[in-house]
Image (cartoon, rainbow, N blue to C red; front, side):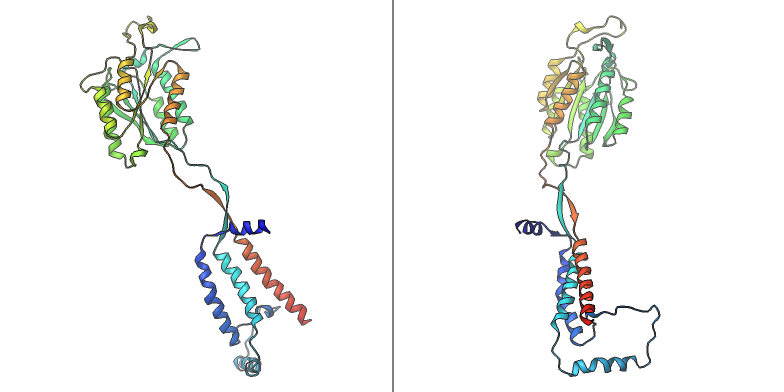
Length: 353
């Protein structure tokens, strides 16, 4: 009994306004039954011919057949009204669309949009990474891990902005991961944008792009991830001051250093490219001024871990009620209503026999 009460208490209605139709409907049925304008539901015709003929004196014959009942002063049969009321209640309940809450749906993604600010200067050709005992250049390693990160991210928008002396949007904020992967594969060091890194201008360029399209609340603004191997950036705009300005505008910048921090990783085989290690001191100050974290990608594993740490740190709090799959129950009152009519018909037939 308690289980039945619990099941009934869990039933909800999608269109409960239909229940307001039932009282006037019952009143209308009462009037029609009282005036003998409505056949009782338990005495409907059992067989109907496909061809009908109306007698010329049909109305007179109808008056003669129903007149004795009206004039005899026979009391109003409330049982007929009850039969009709129960049948119409089932129909109205069906239209109200009852349902219950089923399996709980997964919570929505908790990560915010991410903008990757990727250094594409000529220094990204330096091969100071070892993968399976082989020298790998910085850009190849960065593209591999960035593609892996895109594959692991679900439900978030990602943007990629490349920079060296100039900055350009490689991919705007989008959740089209096939497009993002294709654009990341196109990343090449310093094809059109110069050979040096202008970090300050790149950060201000990113800020302008965000403010032009960003209509999100402060707590849902995109996070910015800077991936660079900068040693001596162009100082037209001090990148530390630009990082401070980003933080003042409500944005957080995380920094991932690409490359080795000392000259010990120099590859003598590339004589045409002067080797410079990454400036950790500068990048740490940029991250601190922008309210973000600093990471060193000393190998592929540490770069992946840095991105996962940033992703976890940038989770936004989502205050949403639990969502459930609605399970429709309208078929049960419909079946009950039809069954009620059939039972009344059978009862009338058996009583008549």
